[in-house]
Length: 127
Image 1: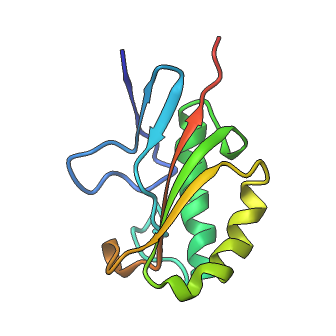
Image 2: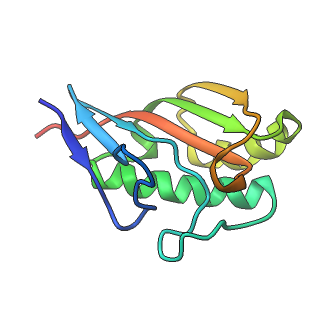
């Protein structure tokens, strides 16, 4: 049986989807973009600043599900421009020292004009 995750510490879903779903001991997050959850405005103008905010949002969703970035097994990352890859990695590496599996692709456009979006699959604490 799956369980829907929702937290006010990350941006509310802006469409017909959930922030995350827990199923089979894993949490599957929706993509997190760099919006301030209180104001709904885009945070930062550089890929580094936007990656920081997207990860903060991802951390909030993972925490609400009983997980964290240390339990992530797979991420999918979307960049508006692949030329930002090195700058994105410089921030990403600080939050994912366990080096989960990852796909990173260039997307022609991301919601709200974001430069980055990150989704994750992570283990949850059982008990």
